Image 1 (spheres, rainbow, N blue to C red):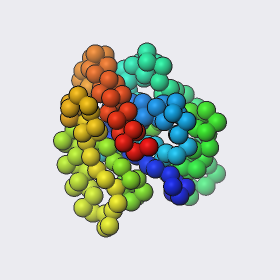
Image 2 (cartoon, rainbow, N blue to C red):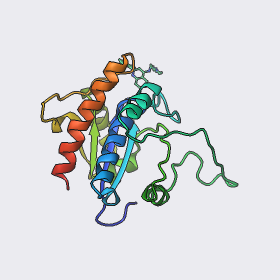
Image 3 (tube, helix red, strand yellow):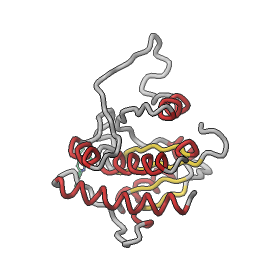
Image 4 (cartoon, rainbow, N blue to C red):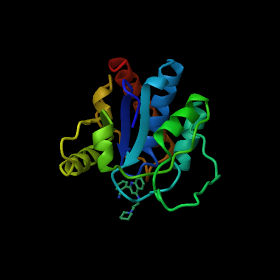
Length: 192
Ligand SMILES: N#Cc1ccccc1-c1cc(NCCCN2CCCCC2)c2ccccc2n1
């Protein structure tokens, strides 16, 4: 659980390998450049199980590299002597500590959990299918507090939907990146 006073945002798309990792990386860089990343818990997740455990799509990684947005990814692993936390994410406090020291950690696709609806203030998704999936999933979470919105609702150019680039080209990933930059900038300005 994030420290008190910390703001929190979870970016969500279908597979958590294309759009939401780009949005997460763009937002984290903006908050870092603005000197306020310590005030935020930032993560991304999927509505589906399609890509659980997989790294971000190589086209998205290439796009981030072209724009100088850290989305570093290593093939390094670690393990436990016990089976107490199989499948769990690293502890959020540990991740925050790593990131505070500029040690970015690679992202692995994960599916949104019931706990996410209780622990994130904002859940921002990419298209109407994500929105309906999230609203359906939220119905099974009692008294959830997250505000579920389309990330595109923050776009000053009013492009509401961030289309799935999975079957697309590098240009489609560039369009996702440009939309994420506009929307994350507006969202951060509104919530700083
Ligand atoms: N579905 C759809 C779809 C429809 C229109 C445009 C894109 C996609 C699409 C397809 C994907 N994986 C291929 C199908 C996966 N299998 C579907 C049947 C169940 C077993 C898994 C994606 C994977 C990661 C991120 C985004 C993706 N987006």
